[in-house]
Amino acid sequence: MSDIHIDDFYKDVARMLVQLYRQFPRKSLLLVEEISGPDTPDEYGLHSERHQSCFGAAIWLAESGYIRYGETIRQEGLDQVILTHMGFTLLSGSADPLPDGEEATENPQLPASVAASRRTNIHLLRAVLRSGESVTINRMVQQLLRQSLDYRYA
Image (cartoon, rainbow, N blue to C red; front, side, top):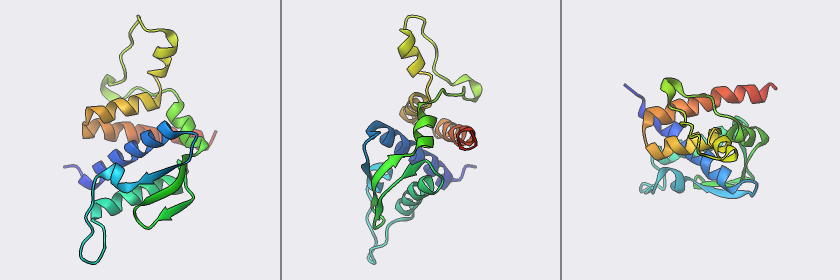
């Protein structure tokens, strides 16, 4: 049985990275509700566990060196967020095939530049997010995290 909070973590990380790649190289505002959905704080003003976990995933991305930010906005989000060198090069880099051959299929009709862009991590990450399949999203994010080790020690 899968741990739901880990599935949510992988999906949040994937969504954040895709959103920040779309904004790169501009710094942007990363709001938790845009990633995890609407939240209604309780009578004490505390956010749901889901909201707090998504915020924690954003902080984890920063502490792990994938993103950088200027400041937190309470637990609503992060301001002045940008991918780090490692985060950008990881997403722009060539994708390793996912287990079970779930990488993008090659189309010989495509121009070489288009075919090359379809073999990047960001393209594959967008594709697995569109699929909505938690298992595939989990494997893709795990693969990115493993692949990032090459970027840290290069």
